[in-house]
Length: 104
Image (cartoon, rainbow, N blue to C red; front, side, top):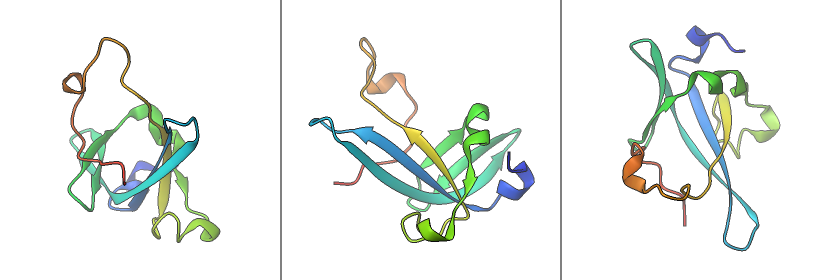
């Protein structure tokens, strides 16, 4: 795992994976900085998006390989996450807004 002090103020790419309506994989990249919020770490996107980084995600953060630097917007590190539809019985109002918007 990358030391927390190394992550703070580093450039982080969130690599989000999802399945579209046709069953094909899609990906989106969001770039920002890692900041400390009290005892927690957060992702602060360049576009104002904000997302608390869950403790169990920290071990999944990896350095960006030079071959992927362009795709991951020259970030220092990246965090792959999968996203999907809302679980049955829940609505968007049951979740915190992050400000992340899937690209068109």
